[in-house]
Length: 337
Image 1 (cartoon, rainbow, N blue to C red):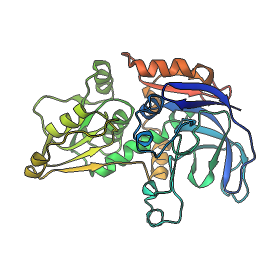
Image 2 (image 1 turned 90 degrees about the horizontal axis):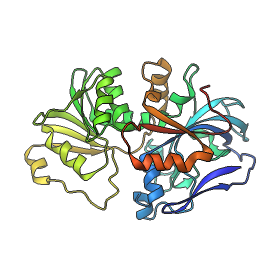
Image 3 (image 1 turned 90 degrees about the vertical axis):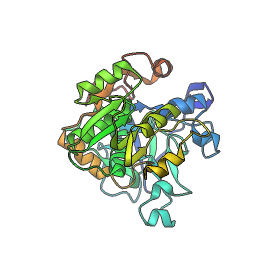
Image 4 (image 1 turned 120 degrees about the horizontal axis):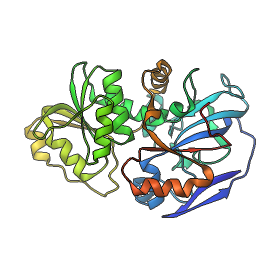
């Protein structure tokens, strides 16, 4: 079966992976749609933090945003059948340590992470995946929406970490996929007002189309969600954070360190929270998708096939105006299911 194989920085090829029956507790899946994420770009370029700290190694098969069809069910798997559509989590804990026992499997020191750390991703024609980390897609949810369950879950976790209240005016810094999904959730699920700060004019305009306002210089917010992953975004977020406010950081900068004016944080009695992964919230996120009030696929601007992966990556790296979410289709899928 064909797969995308990243062998080193800027070294990608279409390779072959062996096809095998699923072992106990696993599913054999046929991915149909896979989103391209900023993390995939960092893996391609070699800047991703897990590569730099040794938690991930080349070669690897990327793809952590996906929807797939169950092709075969391994021994011991219950509740899923051949033909079911499923999505899957990124963090896959050992299930035995203290972190896993308390539900914080995204912190498990022995965890796998789909697409970059010990678990091959979905940019392959067949994929073995643990059934415990797979979730059934609700009826009526399009494949295009389902494929972006993972980034929606990341955004949902960030909003939960912010602890917003209906009526809050929240600033989202960054209008990429995570930022826009956070804005959609804040507006549609939490009843907040949302302003967006982006250094890209077309993304700012798109955010306005979803109901966001544009951040005005000098405005302060009790809740800020950083979703851009850069030192300038962190600086902008802190500059807009009101005294006593809470900043939730979701973006990975790709740098060894980012300056934080810690004295100002102390004097203003502010709080900075990191937000990693999406542990334990996938059923809630899929319920939201099932209500079909939020459509992550509205962010998709370009779709490619597996054979066109290099073109897709070039477009993603170019960051041209008008380029939003990029999706790869597999296994002959070229229309929504």
